[in-house]
Image 1: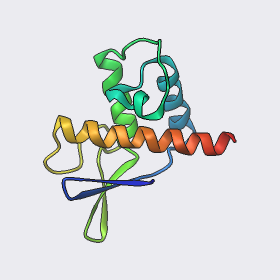
Image 2: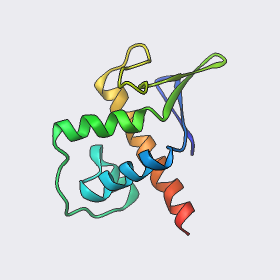
Image 3: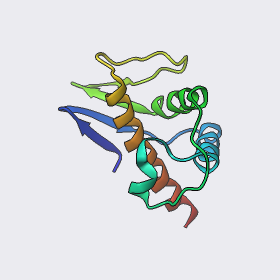
Image 4: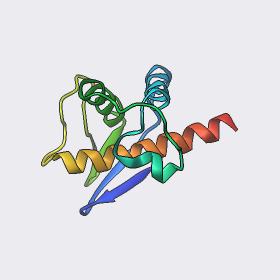
Length: 114
């Protein structure tokens, strides 16, 4: 699954570059996966909750690989500088997109390892 539709908006996911992929992997192995994604994936977690400053860095890192499909254009959810690139971004929307991206990332990672 390389996309998700939330409230009639479609978001596509791309594979992160190797540096960012390593950083994302490090975050999900160091901290609890945010927003309950660990339950969906079936990972029992005994790690710690991600502090707010780390969570913000992590979300910006993940969301820069998420794009909203608007007509024939793909709009980056978070640009490379960390700014929000989509309209009407809310905490629930960004949480939903990032949770689905995390699931996409873990599925992609498992496919690459096996």
